[in-house]
Image (tube, rainbow, N blue to C red; front, top):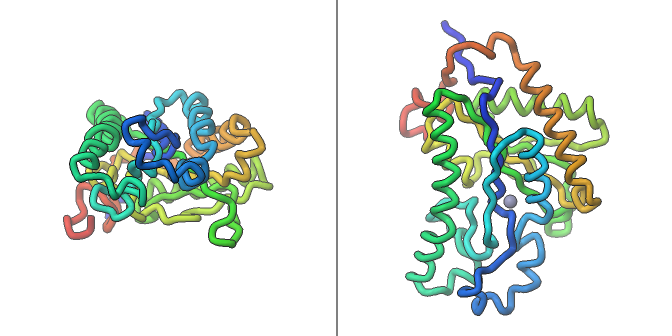
Length: 265
Ligand SMILES: [Zn+2]
């Protein structure tokens, strides 16, 4: 039985930051008059995520795609029909205004990222998308027990191996960092990465959502953390199982990929 592998040595890396901004465009600000506190909190955006995303992109020489409006206007990391696509402040807008937000902010961002990834794949490259987020240290009174979370689809061998090796590399480079996989959320929950895996349908595409604890970044060390994380990523890619490196690209049974039946997507 032939061994099937995802590539571990990605030809290209891209960085995205869906919750980079807490900005509300002028024409919608009337709806957000009572939302100032929420906009400034972790509800409005992923605090410090953009600075760490930019530093990772620089370090990886990768293009970066970042939101220019708050997720309380529209959440770029939710599917079009998800109930949390719009917030309590944007949901009451008239339907044509909501449609304009989808057309003006949501679709252009999602299309731009997908088109970039598709262009990489069309050139025959393998591409890794790092979707950078941050999470609040305490959620509903409970302290989160990680500094960094890797969110991925465990059914995808490439993502699984990459994250295991990346975690190991970080444990050597920065033993004090608490790194957890698929924490504080699951990589298979509704999100942009799940949508991309479905629509790109390529084993040469991998996506990891990098979740940073805002307490870690609030010490003003985004660039340092980004350097450590990116250096560990380099090591993780280089120590990948040799058999997998140049093997023909394939998919595991049950993974999202060209050979899995539609009902498994
Ligand atoms: Zn986020």
